[in-house]
Image 1 (tube, helix red, strand yellow):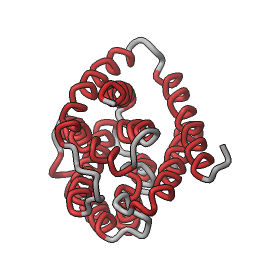
Image 2: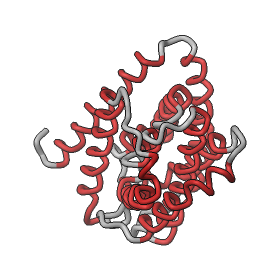
Image 3: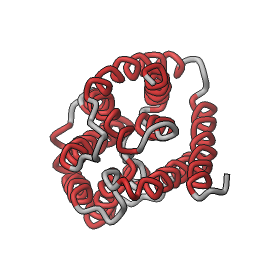
Length: 247
């Protein structure tokens, strides 16, 4: 199990180092093949928190982004408290959560493959932000991953590159904090939160990020992105079909 976790977080960190995102999605997708979504989410706490903080504070303008996106962040908090989806702590809904996670991974992959350009939703940001935030928070405590619809939404605001990276880091950081609080307050019987293993997973995650930065300069980013997102589509569809007994 230890070596599997090390391999998963090295791979997930490598993808995040190359693309700037994808660590929770890849880690959750692979870990849930052998452990429950609740257990997988607990292992994500420390690696996600540290890497997201790194991404958030790599540049300035943090306070400016908080002032701009506080409705989005409040929506994430509210969604993580009152989720409309079956959550990770509901062990009797484990299969629904895994199927939902697979769907999110597949949608994320399809989005990454075909979204060559995004509509400009900046004029509608005032009322869209809390809605998108709520759905993002609700899906985070249901799947352990904040992807849909937060990532496509932020990209549709046509932010500058550095602002986009920081905004993603801000949303990821708040989502991870909410997920950690949720997991702590809603434990599953006989499944302890393994903070020690989560801390150990940080090392391969950081190593993977370092490797990813090296890969970024050797492989054309567009080619790597296509391979990554295609893999998410295949993997997500497999998870959904497997949970419904098709394969």
